Length: 65
Image 1: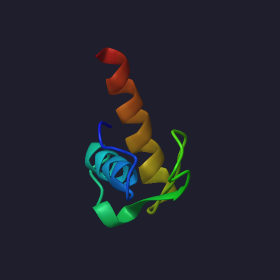
Image 2: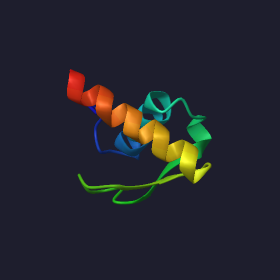
Image 3: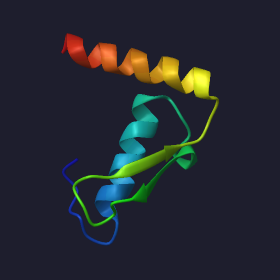
């Protein structure tokens, strides 16, 4: 993301990006650690099987670009 790592802007941008890419509610994605780091850990709330399918589909579509 291009947001500055200031006042949580980058973390919020990443949450929004992941939620949009996986067709999830913004409230389903949250940065749990790494707020001040380039490496971040996310929590994605939802059914594990559905999330795995969405993630696999998203990763496959990234390969095609």
